[in-house]
Length: 183
Image 1: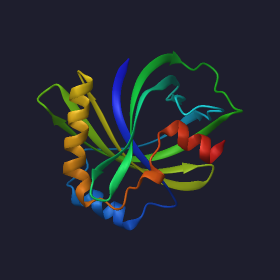
Image 2 (image 1 turned 90 degrees about the vertical axis):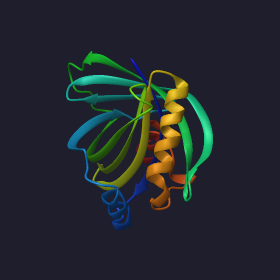
Image 3 (image 1 turned 45 degrees about the vertical axis):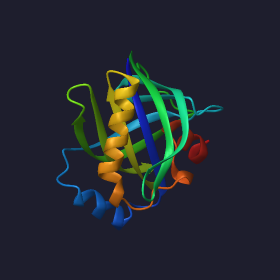
Image 4 (image 1 turned 135 degrees about the vertical axis):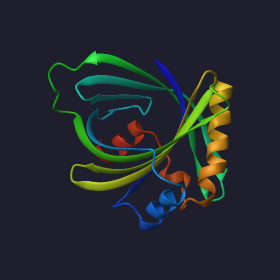
């Protein structure tokens, strides 16, 4: 089980050139990966997400929602606390009610507050049911809620001050995005 503090934005369409240029201006990408995850489309709640990644079931529960926060000039979003579990092998691959999301993800992690907390900035290009999307995410992890908050605030200050407009209407977690897009 791992706990995180996250803010994520989703945008319809191919990656905006200004978003790609902004991310590139922050320095070389540390991690770059492409994969397809299968998500259960939530029927009623944005509080629980299930996905299958590389044959393994993962669950993610929203355990806190802290409302919309100003994170940097031009960046506002809903900060959410999440708890994640890896549940084991998926066995058979479910069909109805699930959606494949292909991702090309670039991630820039940074370690803050010594070894007690870290935050990663992620820029992803998504394909869901043949439709292009892109997303930006800050995900903080750490030994305590306070350490996660400090890592998120410092990372937002460092990285988002020159970001393209990241407004609250586009801010949501994966379950909310899946429900609005595919539900």
